[in-house]
Length: 118
Length: 118
DNA sequence: ATAAGTACCTTGCAATGCAAGGTACTATGT
DNA sequence: ACATAGTACCTTGCATTGCAAGGTACTTAT
Image (spheres, each protein chain N blue to C red):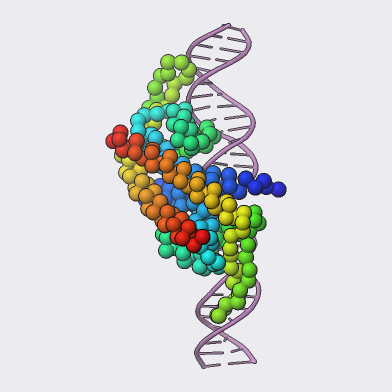
């Protein structure tokens, strides 16, 4: 049995998921970061993500050549993988930003015409 | 081996997917429609979806109580299921619209701060 | 009667977010 | 020196879900 909130939460999650890789590329593009940085910055932007999601995703982006990383020592604790965008990553990010703006336009138009009919 | 475009297309698809249910609720909210109407209106908004995606999705939304339908005769061909939003569907749609706007704000801020650093 | 068109739906696969669990290194307290 | 806690990396297995492909049934035209 689902609670009334479940549909909504599920849908909200789906929206967030769709933009996940995009957001992560944006964050890495702002400056070198390691996994925990990314999690914190996403949380600040109200985009909750967990480790089990992030690590495989970073691996995928590395494998497809959008990211590179280097190991850095930490003041306290084990070394960290600091990620940055490759040229290909930057180009993809540019394209995704365009795509985001197009999607925005489409949906905002749908919203407008929905409101007109209600 | 992936072509350079594949990452991008995949990411774009993910973004679109995340908003799929939301868009379909918006379209149905504009007036009673049957499956083919929905496909056409999505296409007009540059949001391509196919039958094999849409039918299960409509069933899910029906099962969770966001949609209802009634059979209508067609001038030519088999009868059609015309969908409309239930009260619960309207409420969910309102919440999703708010959520969309929040997501928008978050991401646009990320984009801005990315551009500032590049 | 046969073919073409329209509309509904299902099956099986692949991608992927996520909870849970696991390894290893460092720092701290005793 | 040893145990404990903290940090950081990663993997496994499950559930969801988009989508290609295939299937049924009704209507209309030839």
